[in-house]
Image (cartoon, rainbow, N blue to C red):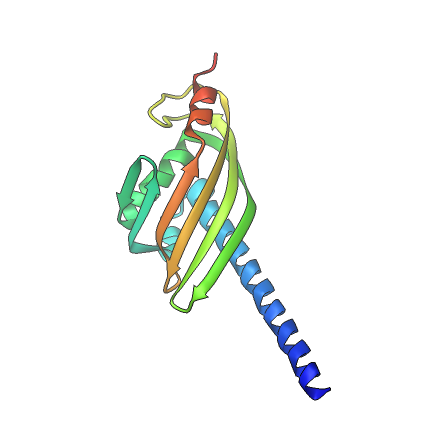
Length: 159
């Protein structure tokens, strides 16, 4: 009976730990995307991104924190009064020295500045995106972004 009780307690502890990790992954994704897509606060973003981080938003590969943050600036400044949601987050902390967090997000706003090489059209735009982060020592060391660029271009160029 005692061994059964220990097993149950251990299982509930692991379940609680996984729940806490899930909550912190959600909070992390929310904070990163808020600062990338809404506030643009470089001092906050510098706390989240490692100086050596690398970002892939096909076909572009950007190296270094400033380049990565400039890439996010394009989305934030291209869409005024943007609203974003974090729709789904998953995480994997299989290694002690790193974590992987993925977020599916959406962004909507008015095309008020250059975006993907297109001058402002004032069209409403809705963007779906997925971002995967590799986190080492508490900071993003690399990220992979997938955005429906064809869908965005269609919305930017419609009459």
